[in-house]
Length: 448
Image 1 (cartoon, rainbow, N blue to C red):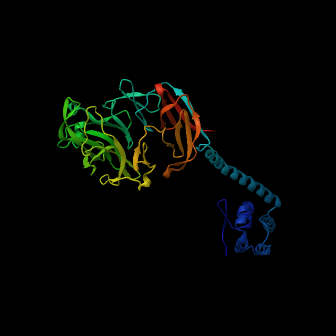
Image 2: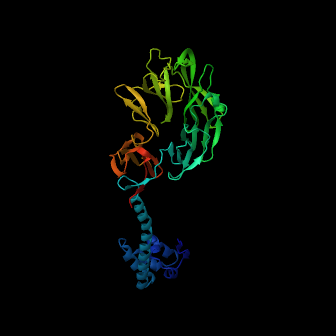
Image 3: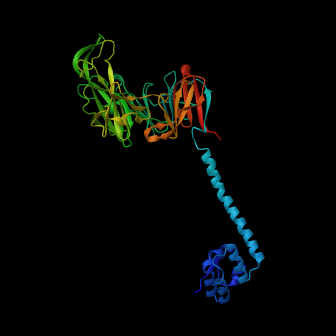
């Protein structure tokens, strides 16, 4: 039975072809059936000699015997071996380059051990209103809105809202909300402004939005407390005071004692259409904020300690009764469950970037901890390092279990010349703000 050996794209059918295209790798490839190839092309004598070779010969010894049988000079075999070794070394060196680069890359991989923070003092700068990877929103002494992409150069922007508006960055979009506007300005006031780039703004009149909130019996301008995006839709937490009885406010303005109602306005787009939803049966409660995280909705609530808990009495000094914080949670934002000591899964849960659920053993109640910066609670950098602050020190720790917010030991990795009041992560920077508008930027990098 004959078959063809291929060397360098050529069909090899004779011993002369093997001599002209000698390749020791090909010969070794066909070591087990080289005698069959010889016999198939009528080289019976050579085939018989190959069959008589001891089966335990090394490859080198086998090649020497084969070359003698088919008439290939020993010098040709020696030259072929040198060429094969050179090619093997070249291939090995070529394969080693990516491995070396991979090793170098691995060496430079971010960790607490090779972390470098270079802190540079900057000109005084007021604390920003919003910091996210897409940019920074701030205001100046005149109440003008400012925007920056690099934390150093700012441009003036005009979202159409006052400097008291609330700022958010949700679903790749900057959002400004005027939480409250005087009733006289309802027709002309801007309710919501939003922008994809932080420079060009789209505005929604307050009247268009709040017609979904104002209900019969309400006497005050309704408030928009907050907004969240749950991955599918925007949800606005809104409130309105309803008159229940006549009373006196401050001794000179007659108003009714009131009962506060809460609503959620849902919309797949910021421009609507909007759908109004009752918050649910939360009688006697004041709601501070609405959050979403870990697949659930959360309410930060206050329970009024009064003789008549259904009525919020507006006192002459504009003060309110003592409040006790609490947490409610829900799967659908309609049916709410009050968290208690049995809900241990809530303890330490990061609800969103600036909201944590904590359990108070003394009061047997969960409450929302909502820091405006990450000095008091760790903040994650590339999900590998957690930063926190103490005095004028930056501390870092490795992230052990991201799902459980578990970190290693915090160690000082940099210091700066003042005690920070606020600090923010911004891309590969740490923005540090202290008293008297002291300001510094910490550049995050790895040690070479």
